[in-house]
Amino acid sequence: MPDLPHSFTPEDSLIAVMMAVSLSDGRVETAELLRIEEIVNHLPVFATYDQDRIKGVSNSVFDLMSEEDGLDALFGLVRENLPEHLWETAYAMACDVAAADATLRDAELRILEEIRYELNIDRLHAAAIERGARARHMTL
Image (cartoon, rainbow, N blue to C red; front, side, top):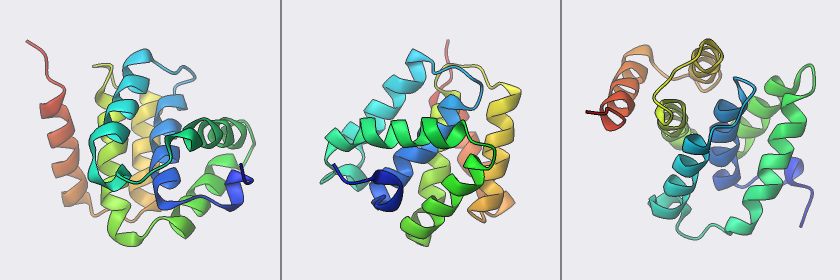
């Protein structure tokens, strides 16, 4: 497999954003991983994606998140490799992962704020995306 940090596909970038949200609070919850898997298995943007790449992308995100400026580097890769018209899609997926375990921790809220900033997501659009994620993950 090629060295992923230098060859992220748009789909890799979407997965990297979702993994960063999952890792943001220092623990990867099963519900979050299952949500990522569900997203990859069902959304059209991943229709032709080689799912064998997920582990490599995840390892790249783990490595980047352990570096001092790793989050900045990750956002640089995402902005470079993800078409701008999919930036809101990335944010929507990030919100779904954050909401998957029914608990939004401070670290997850901070990374969502950072994603909004780094991907230039309009605040009104972000609020609508966040409300949709919250509605999809409600329980009885």
